[in-house]
Image 1: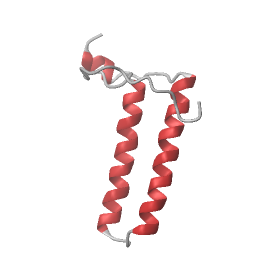
Image 2: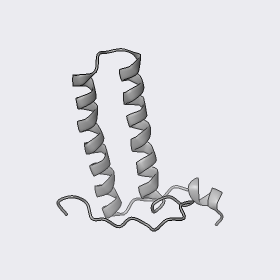
Image 3: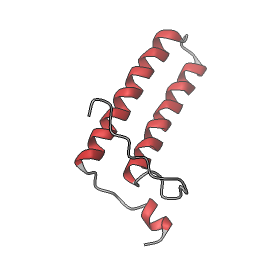
Image 4: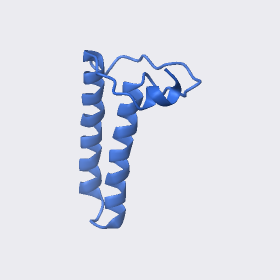
Length: 83
């Protein structure tokens, strides 16, 4: 399978990945609440929330593909906080 096929193939999550997805979402939700509580409503807050959602999606893609299929660096294997 080449890189393009790998990146655009569904990757069923393992139980460890499900935990990582939840940790990413929980952290993003907490930060989103900080943004909403701290920033006035308007286009900048909207953009900040949108970019946070994009961050979550990109992080989840990294989890799904094992840390970034095109990454030349080592794979991160740090345990989840509290694990």
